[in-house]
Length: 347
Image (cartoon, rainbow, N blue to C red; front, side, top):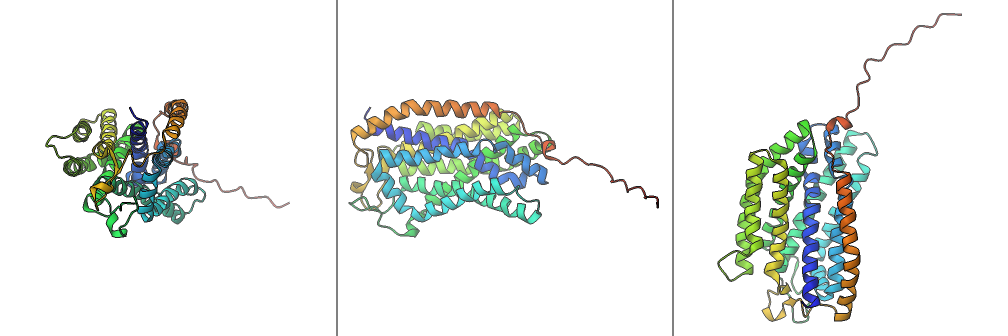
């Protein structure tokens, strides 16, 4: 296997890993103020992802860095073309990170409500914008013979791209709701199940429609490829598991649906990395956008050493923080009525 093809697969795996792991983080961020009735419930929901969210975002950084090192032409064309969306994406990521750190610094209701809103909006923007960007790779953008983006801001928002972003948001919502049902107890778990059952059918319909649209754009054949078929079956299995109250199976099914959905884009894309809507001859491919062979060899050695270490460390983190989170852990105990002071006798 050529090194360029190998690194295309690595980057596809990194993007898939990001959405599998960060997908439920984003879902919890969007749902934390909806699934809980009070401050204790919101804190409990946030603490289900508290030890995990920043480690999960590392996959996004590594995916972008891998594109930069392995396919500099792909990185340059994509990030310059999608520059306005990337700025909004960074704003969403910053809003999320800051809200985790700042919402508990003061006890004011308005203070916490403001950061709750920032967390919700930031968590929604991330999958929406990345979904639009990934869909644009497959749908096509105006790219000239010099591999430069030649379009305008409006060219970034195709119908397929916007629908892909919305579908990814729905998948994150379902992924986050099933994660909360798996990680919480009592009323928070029950509320998470209700939301998952409500979101599930809508998500399933959107995903099935998205699979059909993706196949129509990327393939000339009639039959779905394997990742597309798995995506449709997995989201249906998730809805069926929710109906029977099997939290573990529901979360596993949404994980599989998320992974196969992202993989579907890259499977349909290969051997291209960006499609030019101007002329097929201007498509960026794994061959004309890749770094030199020596650079790819060095990257392969580094990845072979460090990627397993990162995966083992992150797996250990999930093992350590595997316990369920209860709302009662965050409720302030009632101290009871305060006794009036005894009167002092005059001396």
